[in-house]
Length: 139
Image (cartoon, rainbow, N blue to C red):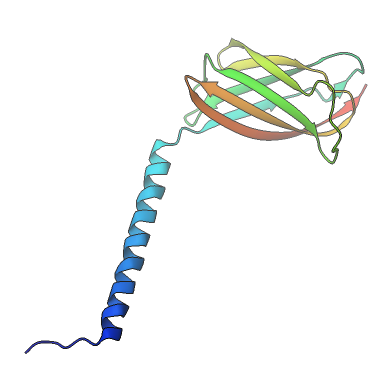
């Protein structure tokens, strides 16, 4: 009448239950992370050329995942020339809002080449970071 379980079968079932519990918790965490994430999109608008000794205007459009402009954010950008390990002089900028999700700032890019811009957006305490690549040549 009663089913007899060996130690091996009991351990197999316990192991299977542990795996199922880990899978369920993992899926729940993934679901929660997906629901709470606020994705922002940053479009980086850079000039194609620069003049040595002059600042280059850098523009960005920041929107939410529905395409609505982000207003009132604090934006900072750090520039790093790809393939260069030396420390540049002034490699960062702060962008100011000009309206409708548009932000502008001036970068002091010293050399032509390929750059990575690390853009940090702080909107009402929510922080977002994105990297964009661009190239610029000397006039």
